[in-house]
Image 1: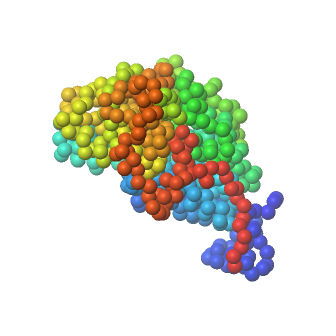
Image 2: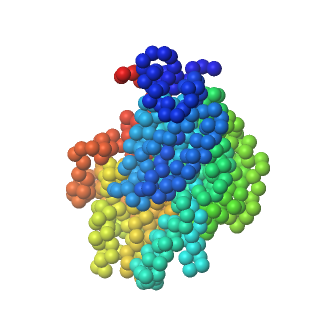
Image 3: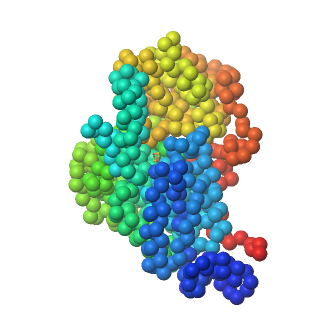
Length: 571
Ligand code: FES
């Protein structure tokens, strides 16, 4: 057997190996350093990431599995991001979490890593880190929470917050009733139970081949999660011995499989930026257009909020991810491997569906075309995305006057002004929300509707933004407009009253003004004023180096990988 990477710290009789071993002994037997694999458990458990607060329990099961297979488990707390708390937006810190995790994996004496994530940005950040280090790596998704209920009806995290708050603004729900729902929303440990970003990325981690097959989507309180965590602990030892690294698993074929699955499950638009960023770490050729061309013909099969009715617990009960994938098996790359060394499709032979309301047959989909549509035009030369499955069909072809907001604060200040010149046909345009402009590309694209239109019964309008949208949100929202306003995109030049033309079938997003006028216009002074580059710290590094949404919004110097090279010694 070739020498372990960790042996470069522990092997030998010299002073430095003594130092490395002695400080690590702390009850470990002497043979802990004689060639047994040392496995980091990169753990995003944090009280400030409530969706991940149970991961220490999961880590113990992983640890038991590693022990049982002869390895040495090592808990490695890494940067954690609580989606609902972290300001100004968790996305600002995704790349920092990835970079810090990458560097700590590389800097320490480890031979492989088990990645524990859940809340939205945590699994993408862990996968980006693992891809750049290249050590054997496997994800344990923390799993969704159980379904909460309010007034006898299920509550979907995020989606129902948006719905209930709109009802309050429309005057059809009292504030007291709204607040009563608060303690019912989060029923158990685990991440959001809708098909939001956390659910999407947990499931896609498995489709990419990076989890124990069958584990993703297991609810957080379900004892089968701990059983799977134990099995993952055993598996990582086998992976280390086999030298099974992420580059053998995360191929273009596995990313295309993820795009098929993203459409079939009705997953979050955030998966576009996250998958592009992970692929960018591996040098895998993947473009925003792949999401349209590969996902276009894929039907929506999973009837989950926000596109449908049910929640993640129902999906698990109905047969889970494998049952969904079995329906679209012919669209999957049969060569794409999993962490076990076997192809993903081999796990789909025995994947029955137990509830056809939740997982539809291919012949009777919820929607026939569920992919992400990529739009281009004079408003988005480098692309913008829309999730037609979450949109109002009658608005997918629309022409209406722009009502422009220069920042989220501008939106909040003026949206409910009774004098705001806006109708149901207007197109709400929000800019200054891209990676550089906000900074951090927040989930604000699904901007609320003007109160006076809500009161009149309007429930959807065309909205356009250079930011992102929560995976739990819905509506006719064009997002990830690239280039963003702060990077000189034409979005910065649109004025209130300009006619906007959206044609999703033709994949177009344009502003209807005479040729040449758009180029000749200066960006809105308010947009320029709102974009004040930070002077120091992470925000400055981020704004100076972040890429646009159409390439994953990673930092330019983090693209690619540095491998698991062992650095020089300082003792
Ligand atoms: Fe953590 Fe939704 S807030 S997954």
